[in-house]
Length: 121
Image (tube, rainbow, N blue to C red):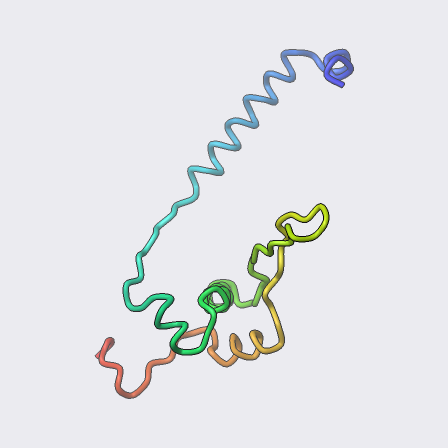
């Protein structure tokens, strides 16, 4: 395949395309920022005490955050182990249901403060 490509395309053209690709890649990655926050309010023990699976709790939290950011609910990635089956590997499950949709829509696009919340007063 490589030889056929060299016969069709000039090496200078390929070098130019490679340079353009690197510039586009650099522009793409420099236009992104990552800010991580560490939430210390509660952890998995509290979530379990409340009767929820921590993983499911986080999946729904990500769906709510995505809904509030983009105005639509999307499937979140959930790795599913199927190694116990013949030729098993990790598969993907999309954790969206009618129940999660109802919850996301009930929570709405904006957080609501209750009457006892003094955080904005």
